[in-house]
Image (cartoon, rainbow, N blue to C red; front, side, top):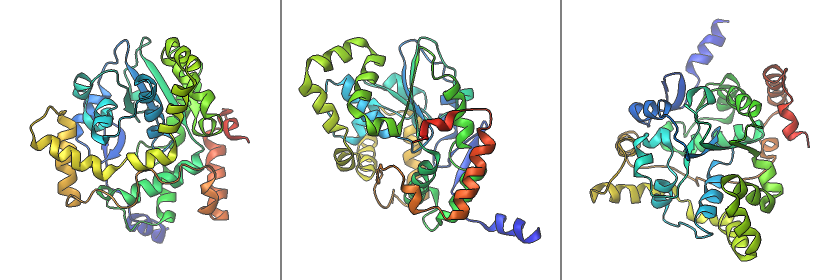
Length: 321
């Protein structure tokens, strides 16, 4: 037992902080996270809400292309300002957000002051693939200080719920239980991957029926959205390093910026020596990559976790195929 405790204490962990019960990257501003938690959602607000690495960026591109009539935003900072992460930027970013825009959040249901007249798009992903994707995300973004961390170390943290935004299933299940609410569109990464065109049309209709009608009447517009939200296009244009550089220029020029985003930039420079990441922000976007990473023992442990957390739910039927 003493050795197990010692091993746990010595295990390398990413740099997180706990803000009002929510585990978030320590590079974020505590004030910004608090403002996100206490932000009272407004009628007309449109949110993309996910557990990290479940297709958030993909959905942001789809939604923004629908709102922009198929015109891509290739400047990564402009895209971010039009689709801000409320925990990262702070609630004041919403007032600064050029319209039309969409708000991104990973906050769990119980930490959101939801409004029945706001709309929420939730994207879930097979938890095993989510675990692998979140590992590379945490390893490659240098502010986590986990670049030497192993998958085995991260796997154990994920099983324990000691990662960004806590336990995967505690985050997923409340959204799954509300999936039939009129103001919630619940989908999965895998469903979008399998039937992208159909999902784009459904998302357009959820935002506003006029958007779907426009897409149905203009096949080229629909094709443009599919092309500009494709994995290859996003990998080329969702450049995190370019985002940080543009953010630096934006701040130096004295342009309007949210308090949280400005603090993030300052903290990023302090923690990482202005080296933002290695690798690419968008990696594979594939289904089933967990099979290339899990050992048989890890698969057994994960299945036990699933069995325990979902014993009163059919949520895993989402991935029965």
